[in-house]
Amino acid sequence: MRNIFLLLLSALLLFQCKPADTPPTLILHNAKIWTGENESSFVQALAILDSLIIASGDSEAILAMAGEETELMDMGGKLITAGFNDAHIHFLSGSMGLTQVELSSAETFEAAIESTLQFIAENPDKEWITGRGWQYTFFESGLPDHESMKALNINRPVFIRAYDGHSAYANPKALELAGLDASSEFSGFGELVKDEAGQLTGALKENAMGLVG
Image (tube, rainbow, N blue to C red; front, side, top):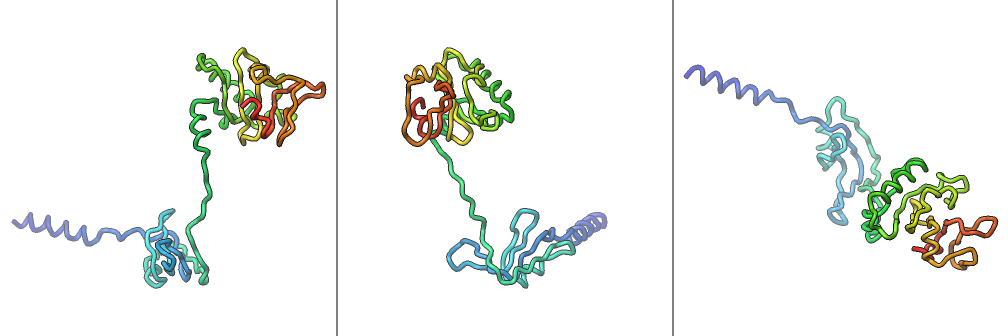
């Protein structure tokens, strides 16, 4: 019985002596903080542990949570709100991109060509090779042309947009199927890019991409 009593006493002492909850790393106080719950939901202070908000309330209560290493920031009555982050997605083209050439991770021209050729080899039944992601800095003139993209001069049409979607490259087979040649003209917003000799380079800008795309 004495041993059981000592065991229970030891457990009680351990429980009572356990360390307190970790104090916040940062406290913002003396502020007007909008919580977002409704139009008038404001508090004076926030306690933050690393990157997590762990408490909110009046300045006195939140400051009482501070530890020796807690950073205290007096906000001087300023307004604090959650961050406003603008993001969007082109759902259709983004979904289609899962089955196309994806070059956004290619950091060099050689890597982009290698990835495209690998995609072509792995998809022998695709009638059109389409995709997105090449960088303008890959090319001396800022745009691709048939000479620089000669590795893609294959018997299948290739149409790959730049990373920003404002320009594209179409290989000779793609231009042929689109009915485009040196005599073709484009008069809308964009450009059907030609070289000094008046020949198509394969580069298309803005709405001119629609001639192939």
